[in-house]
Image 1: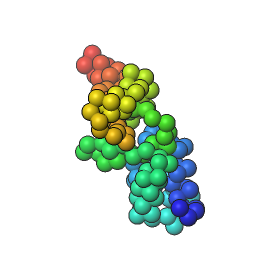
Image 2 (image 1 turned 90 degrees about the vertical axis):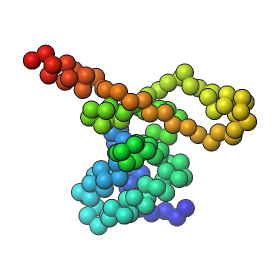
Image 3 (image 1 turned 30 degrees about the horizontal axis):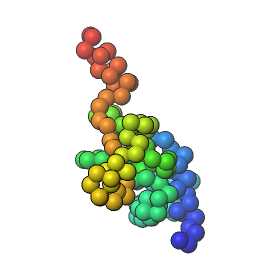
Length: 132
């Protein structure tokens, strides 16, 4: 893959933002210091970077894709109230791909797990609002 300054900027923006940004968020982050960058360029580079394994694309139902610069296998939690995505290290599923392949013969190339619920902040905000 040929080097591209804009691709490098997109990669850096994803890796430096632990919020698991959307394409629009990456675009707005970069637009401040790089007014020439287009939204189409951001989308194109996010897709290319995820296809080459340099970032992880997290497809979220009804919310579009989020992107993660942390490429070591891990899982995610999605808050149904605020929409934030959090990393989840879960050893419980270590070896899952191998177990599936051994029991079914299916050649697993990857998997994703997204746990949905409410983050501590939103739980507290909900408790505070019902207490009044």
